[in-house]
Length: 375
Image 1 (cartoon, one colour):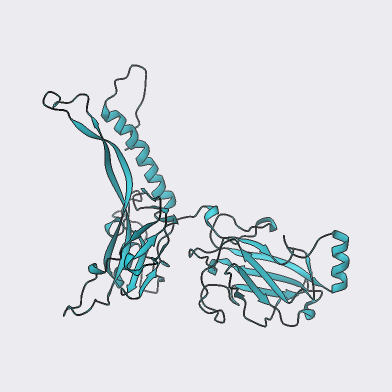
Image 2 (cartoon, rainbow, N blue to C red):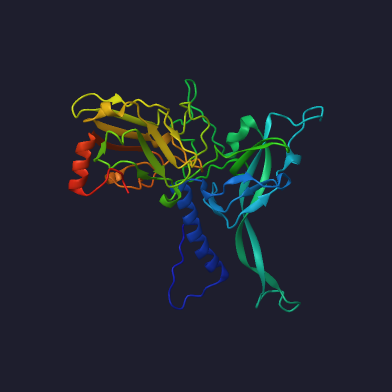
């Protein structure tokens, strides 16, 4: 719909004109959503087991865009029974086919509501005529049994690369689809969760569902550090460095393992050195890890006195530090201010400070009237 209504005094307007005016603005909005934002979960819509197993799962309120750019709003938390009956059986019918999983799909639905009388119609002489006066934009939740190998067809995003011999994004040619055409998953599904296991022990996975860009207030940030950026810390204080986040991080799997994500020795790094020399790693007594509150990350220090007079460079690789919603922390330390963030998930948090003797630290703090920690 590329034609706009041109209004002028004295113009005759029919129902078609009002419908076309609405269709123009709606089609442009959906095109904008799809091409500039993509499709997937925008916020919320977390899926968790219900307290009563027979009730299935609870889907929290939230918003998603489908592949056509239509907004799908779930205004309040809703309970959804797990569709175990949809799971295909093996050939002998004795058990569920292990090649399949259940996918919880969120789909856009329109409902016609609010009957109103038609003041004029061709049937007006026979009996009163009524039409639906409004369209309610709603949603539906459906379970689909999908082969594990076919999850990508439903918009699930399993980790994969492009090894030699694959060509995931060939250059466009004369026969390529237009970029304006929607590319939709099976059944127009916005996949919220994948369920494996059985009724006794269902396993709910939301780690690979599709997201679109998050508003800054929905992202997690670094909100406190135990030193002053560009400042100083006494040697006696430099036994442990702490960082706090404004939202809990994802549950750590093993604090002693430098896994692919989470707080560990690869994502929480400290280096030390003089101004014009190579930096050495600051050694720790215990692997950098997340405390029980899941909001505080700590890095312990071995023999802190040896770093007196040196500058400490702190780096948090936030591309790999995920919050409780599975989103990378917005870690950009713009202008050296907290909370961190530039409105984009991920990034490196960079900061530094100088370790000084206790006497010098006391002299500096008395002179400036400050302490070493960021408030």
